[in-house]
Image (tube, rainbow, N blue to C red; front, side, top):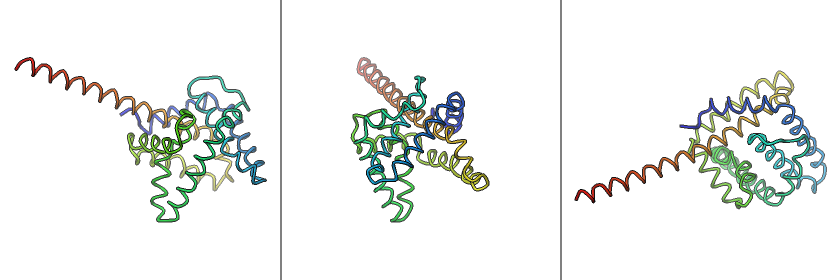
Length: 216
């Protein structure tokens, strides 16, 4: 299996370590811009674009592209409409999921773990297609694997935050961001490997049928 939690942790940590300043400063700018935007109702509407741009900058960092500090805003506003719809739909679904029995909300939260990465990697997809692709990626590598990764990233940090006045989150969020992104990339590789395996098996089956028919 191409995806393992260890690979996600190791790959994400190294990517964050090599680009720590850029990731941290851009994250700080995104957070500050979101706080300022939240002052007004109109401003709240642009928050998805702010964080969409930030996530897009992480994708470019992961691909080895040059990312400059503060350059992420443009990409987010380019896809503002579709990002807003995606945020809105996911918020409503998760809210109802948690209000019902909690468990449906937790299930959807993990199943849709990769929606922002999927959308910004594939801007032509509709929101429903994005939800479906994220669910497929998570299912292929194992819902419980992604859930366990989520717990590993969130619980220890939450405990440390209680003793550091949330300073741990401020310091470590570049590592968390890149570990989550690494999990997404590993899930893509897993899908590709599965398709290649199925294609190979299909070719072998056709070859066996040909040999059998030739022998007959």
